[in-house]
Length: 441
Image (cartoon, rainbow, N blue to C red):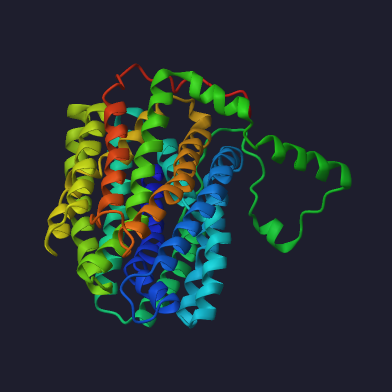
């Protein structure tokens, strides 16, 4: 009963945080274009600067995600969740105050600095929290429900954006981000991983300065914290722990490569091709979110036990590839809306990858494993803008070698196809989550 209560509070925390995060996505393209290229529908500078931002954030996340996951195994999930949820408020508050060019650059810098730690860490820690409290047999469905909560927040956030002004959008998002931090600190119980949890990083004593340690004990604690940083040997041990884990890591890389590439290119492509604005972006995202929510909350709990995570992963990646290719050859403004309906099936992929990974490590290494997979995704986030942002800018410009505005989107689809082919090679094997696979603590 206590575990169910903890999960319900986690789901509410994730809903509020994602609501704040997602509701600004339809507006940020217009804000960026207005700040950098006012009055224009095509702007290579906006594409490049957004791609650079994603690459730097991905590089920071690649380093931080395994570290954060490892720390959560040691100090608890709640302590580590607090930091990214609070830091995410800062860039939202900047644009809530003003969206002039100078404030946009301030947002740009703070977004990079905070997202290097925040990007993906909330989801990673939430997955580890769920894995702590849900048996293996029900984990895929639970991960699907967690993703469904995120999709539900996506729908609600984009619906709000549809009927709010740009200024109000960022103000409401800032308020909701603050509410998620307060709710999490007040209501969310920590996830009990084992009996050897260290003293929490964030505690009343630490906040009030009550804990005083001598120099020797302080150095000892610092040494323990640095040992928490995963080494290359730890990462290799995870990859070698099972063929399934290494295959899931490859699938995760190419899947995230495609997802980040699509996110970096699609909105600018639609703005240049069909003159979409904030309202059309919101409509498109609502369709995607509603289909994904229905699928994850209703279909996945039924299909995951019946088909298994491996088959469901391949189904999700197939439809992900198909919907990206439909975007690339869109011949009319309604085609992107039709392609968005494919989210009914492609949302299966991420929960299935996480569920497969969670069964390949020990119960006290969930944070390390989920952090490692998040790090793989962050590495893809570094590579993707370097490849796809220049392609998008080139084929949306007047100097394109041939007329194919969606060429970069099609290349994104090929990356998703590689992930799909690799997923077909994953075979279900008995989980080894009762064993430890890492070398580190």
